[in-house]
Length: 467
Ligand SMILES: *Cc1c(COP(=O)(O)O)cnc(C)c1O
Image (cartoon, rainbow, N blue to C red; front, side, top):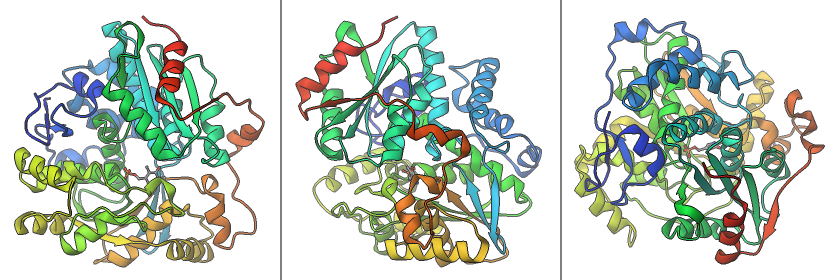
């Protein structure tokens, strides 16, 4: 399968190249040139497959020219064997035809494990064959860093450097990153805020001459195509459990960078009967504002109780725009360039197409807390604040109570004890038993000044080995 850029100018690449490339050279994002299409009979034949078997079937066509089927099967099996629940992505019912899809049974208790556990293994496979060593560099304000570290901890051909803002991530989140042992894992606490960390990463990608011996930086942020690909699977898996393709299913997705819900849209375009796709945002509601009035406008960043959705721009929305513009890459390039300077609108036809696919709702902190409280009172099920946004957005946007509604639960409540306590819990939610010793484990991280030369010097000096 070939991948093309949303801005229409970069060369088409194969899967292996896209895996290592990150952003396209024209500033766009890579998407598959065509999507595999499945009819109802074929989708129905997947009913009852275990998660890993289904994942193999769905992922295989996307990587076919790079990874042999037997090897892919082994990678996928190993990836989803890391999850602590037998179903990998279990459904829990919280109301009439209302479900929560638990995506937090991976090693770091957030849905990013679905993609990053796979990504680390894909990197190692491809790099082994190329006999190449790469350096992953990323900035995190929480979930992504720990999921990336867990995903790459056993990679022989990868050194991973994750920058987090010193003393500005929660203790659970810091410990999830800094207690992972491995010579190739490097945590840097930067004396600055998250934006400072991101700026250091961005500047390092722009000029990689600080790396010794022709090494290359690789990105694991949410624009990486392989991450999105992995997320398509749980839409099929949950919908099949609820009776698809014989009846449609709706999904509500707590949205930040739009990677997760975009995967849902791909599932729909591949043939899965999805009735509604609901974008749930927090107060950082650029997408909801766009869906309401066709104005794509940056606002200042707000800090919310759902920090993993605190974004100003949803990077992956560009991928959806590319399809909504009927794959006119030059029009997308023009729109995105104007968007750098000003508020933009899309042509009416494009906007109408967007409204036909997506519903949206913005959920503020007060209503997030109220939802956690209400659901707990009614069912004794404890939602994390991100998942609560999905539940509330679903309730606000739902059109048809005969269609199963699935809210994606993207994090375990124990990751966000403050929000949960504010929702009337008398004690902080417990971490799963296998993480009971998180507070006793040894931490390893280095505090550095917010200075490009200092950070780059540290990276150059600490690369574990080169193959
Ligand atoms: C990353 C994240 C999100 C947002 O996902 P996107 O793909 O960026 O839209 C939602 N909830 C949690 C817990 C996350 O970690």
